[in-house]
Image (cartoon, rainbow, N blue to C red; front, side, top):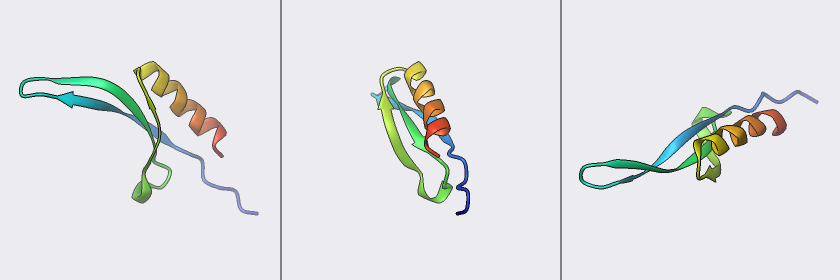
Length: 62
């Protein structure tokens, strides 16, 4: 059985925008293991939670 490629993730801010401001209201973890097929893995309220989730995704989703 061939070994699968390691999982890679990134985090992106989720914005709420009005006429003058952009406010970060959350964070998403995105699976970028297949750049042509990026998918949202999870959503989080804080950047720290998103970073932890991305690290866990990369470590355990293999």
